[in-house]
Structures are given as structure tokens and as C-alpha cells.
Length: 333
Image 1: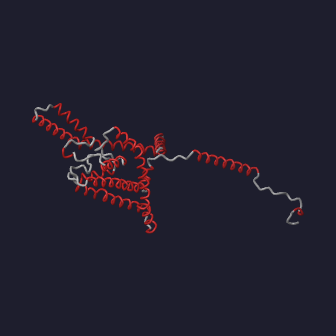
Image 2 (image 1 turned 180 degrees about the horizontal axis):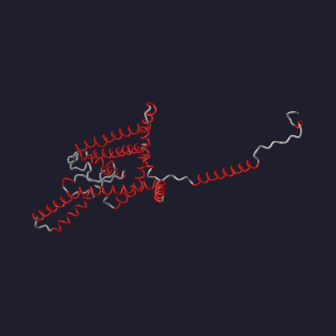
Image 3 (image 1 turned 30 degrees about the vertical axis):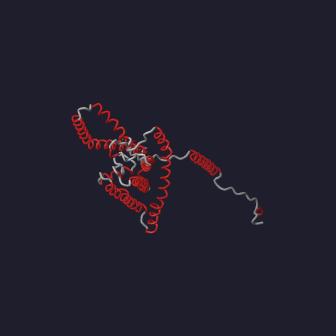
């Protein structure tokens, strides 16, 4: 008996706090996913890092042996300054001196990466004035970009998703959830083809040191706004039509970001995903003014009901005036 009561109370507790339990499982799953990613990245990349460190030490040791007049301290100082300059996009190599990081097209590409929060990190402001302007420019520009993207995506969604789904549903008689799933799948396939596969093939042809996987990797890292910066197009030595190439990449990033948001919004409008999201959300509470109105109406209705019941008990039948004589009847008169 006690066990059944305890189990029933546990079930009632879980049922009453179902959203909280779902949210706790979501947090736990996210943390486990973070740990899983850390374990995989560490196990895959750590051996490559160790091998690269050993190769660099061997090259440095051989260089010092070939140049006895150069001390290790001076070499360390020189390499430190060169690497710091490289972090700002400035290289001391002779074949890289022809490329400027702050001409108009390069600055336009940098501005697009700042506003889209991609931020490759291959170029950064050098002066204090540039750093201060970057802060002010980002504070104003990022919300402006979000507003711009939201407005553009809202208008595109009408013609790319809502109207086609409703047309097929009303004219062909197919189930609306089924039509929405098929439409979202086709739209995602078209987006992957036009903004990942085809551009990856183009980048692998234009960039000398990129294969197709590296080009596809750049497209995904860029359009998902991760922006690691390990692959940046247009930075090769003696790049042909570099200015036009940078402008084209800027247009590709903006259009690709819009298309990715359209695809994500299309999937978010699926009925199945809406129900899945509701599992982890808090239930909306009624506003206080609405609750006050409902309580007032309920109190008034209860008072009227009690008064009517009291009158029914006191006068169970409808009272009829007593007639003194037949002549008093107006009908007879």
C-alpha cells in the first residue's frame, strides 16, 4: 500500500513538473554533447599538434646549427615579432608584400565579417582609433544587421515557404504537415547544392592550395558564422582579380546567410518541431489583469447563482394573484 502511494505521488510530481524535467534533460544532454566534442577533437587533433611541434623544433635546431652567428635568443625575439604581426594579417615574406589588408575591397570584406559576426580573425585593426571605431561600428551595426536579415527573411518566407505550402494543400488536397516536411527537405537540398556544393567546387578551382573538402569546410564555417579563419579566400600570392574576387565573396556571404536563415525558419515552422520545442518551454502564464477579470466574473456568477438558488427554495412555485370572484377576471370582463 505504501509503495503504491509512493509511486503514485512520484508520478504526480513528474506530471506536474514535466516541462522542468524535460529542460533538465536538455541541459544534461547539451553538457554531454560538449564533453563528447572535446573528447573527439582532443583525440583527433592532439597527435597532429605534437607532430607539428616536433617538426618545428627540428627545423629551428637545424637553422641554429647552420647559422652559428645567430643566437637562440635573437631568433626567438625575431620570430615573436613576426608572429605578432602575422596575427594582424601582416606578413614579412617577400611574396606576400603585394597584398594589402586595408584597401577598399579588403575593408569591405572585413566589415561584412564583422556585421555578420563571422569574424575570421585573419585581419584586425592595428590602431587604437580603428579598434574604437570597430566597437562603435559593431554596437550599431550588429542589431542593424539583425533587423535587416529579419525583414528580408520574413518577406522571402512568404513566397518561398508559406504560399507554396498553402497552395499545394488547398488545390491538391495533401496534408499540410506532410507538404511542409517535403517542402523543407527540397528547400534544404537546393540550398546545400547552390551555396555549399557548387561554391566549394568553384573555390577549389580558384584557390591553388584548397581541395574540395577544404572548400566545403570554408563554406560551412562561413555560412554558419563560426568563422575560424584558418581558410580565407583571396589571400593567395598574386591572386588574379583580387578586388573583384573579394567583392564577390562578400556578396556570397550575405546571400548565403540569408538563405541559411530562410531554411532554418522553414524548419522551425514545422508542426513537429513546434511540438518538440514546447516540451522544453515554460507554459505561458495569464496576465494579471486577465486573471483579475476572470476572478471578478467568477465571483459575480457565483453570487448570482447562490441568490437564485435561495429564491427557488423560498418560492418554489410562481406566485399567482388570487381571484376574488369570476367578475374579477379581466378575460371574463
